[in-house]
Length: 140
Image 1 (tube, one colour):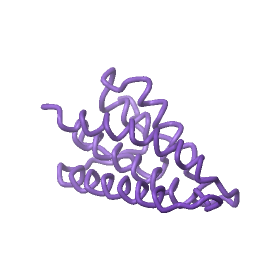
Image 2 (cartoon, helix red, strand yellow):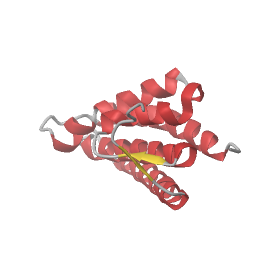
Image 3 (tube, one colour):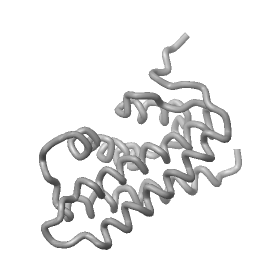
Image 4 (cartoon, one colour):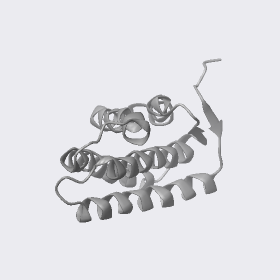
C-alpha cells in the first residue's frame, strides 16, 4: 500500500464547507487589498490568501478523493496531485506551492511584507481560485 501523506477521510459536507470558507477567505483578501494604503503591511492580506488556497485545495481533494490534508500544508500539493492526477495543471501546482510557501513567514514570522507583494500573491490566488471553481463544477 502506498502512503498518501497526512490526509484524513472526509465526506461531501466537509468539502462543501471548505469551499464556502475558501470563497470567504478570497473575499476577505480582496477586501483587505482594496482598502490597503501605501506602506501598510501585506501580511494580513497574504494570510487570507494562504487560508483561501488551503481551503480551495481541501474542497477539491474532498470532492475527488474523499480526503483532506491535515497539519502539513506543504503536503497539500501531494494530496491534490493524488486526488486529481494529471488533471492538476503544472501551472496551478506551481501557484499553490508559491502561495503555501508564504504561510509560515506571513502568519508567524517577523518580516513585514509589502502591499505590492500581497497584490502579486493575490493575482496568483485569483488564477488558482478560478481554476479550482471550474474543476469543482466539473461533473464527476
